[in-house]
Length: 284
Length: 314
Image (tube, rainbow over the protein chains, first blue to last red):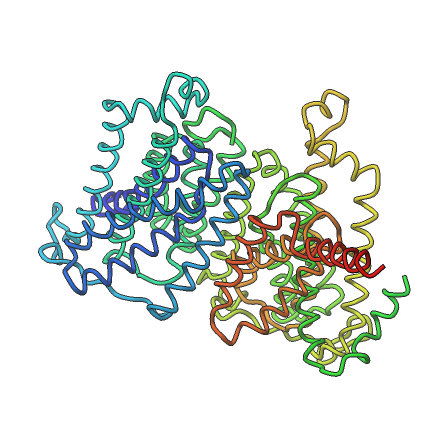
């Protein structure tokens, strides 16, 4: 495996990390699996193309995640709070329905064709990794992946709200009795999750194609990551995201004809051998 | 009983042959919805991936007939048996996971088949992204392919298949097996302590559900003459889920009605290009406002409205 291939695995892993950690955060705290996450990611990618066309990529990289943070507020108050008493599956169906409506709206606004987002300067060139040239932009992607993991870890480990998130994930009732404001915390986690989807969407623009189906495909891969990692475990999600990234790249090398199927096979194998996932405490 | 016999001659009562086309499509989707509804009603599990079995049997039938020149009867039998065998294997894994994970895992399985159908290495078999036009000679139940592609002449076969599948499912739900399944849904632990084997029962109902979807998949290949990757992935699975939710899964008829309602909605809205918006909206509305299904709710409202009108008049 060459250095470039290792980096390719990490680049895909970074994108999946941004999405899967958002899914795991909400699930850990609220026991809601956000089936609309792929829709949020797609929305962010399209907003990213619009904002970059006007104000450039780097502005979009800041503006879109902030806007998506705001969308998290809407999601919380318009959907998750009113339906708080419903089961996780009913919520999954509702969130899927909203994502489909969103997909239709995006097609109506932007048209069904894929859109191209130019790789921003100064990262539009290549860098030499050893002997090989490597696209510089992917290194940014990897940087954001690693940066976001460190940020989440530091937040969970060193801040008061991070402590509260861990407390609520482990023992919701006890945490509430101890005076943790679960409502505010829930809002924060949902907004962080949509903001991360926003970041992932904009970052994906120059790396993958921006098209109306992009959310569905990556949602399913992210869900596989979450199940593989152990449902609700953020550390597990990060590990599984990198594993899936590498498995994809390795699969392309070893069994190119069926590489696309490897993540699904991995899912079945893990479910048979280790139903809790890699790092989960509960059986999925 | 009279209604099922009368149903055989439905096309003669319908003025517009296009209605029969939509009905055939609706009943095919309804069967896929029934497969979803059965899992939901009997085990409390929601499948986001029924298209895996629907599509697999459709593809198996299409490949066996078109690529290998099999007759339709043998191809249909092998497609059904193949799906049943595969569902037994997959079921042994997936019925062990919790309800929410079941949603995700079934979605992933359907996506896996969707990806597989598009693999470059299988393009000679599956036709890749373009799908596969079904061609066969020979007859199925006395019908040639040209008859089957004409909704009016295919109708008696479609209707018979639908009635038989729905009736068998109803018998199963009312049997001791069905009672046992609902007991498992209520409290699996207690059933295990009482000496039952919930694991085996759950696999069995998973297989029955897959078999119903497989029948629908063969009907799709017969009456539409096309196997396309759409029917393997989220697309068909989602539509089947909507059919089950609209019709409600409390009865075996519900998803069939839901499928027909969906097909008529689809033919009315597809020109606008906003079909997906309305499909998504109906998911939200049905789950949030009308849990139990839109069709049962409408029937309830009509009945209570009729009662109110009667009370006022008398």
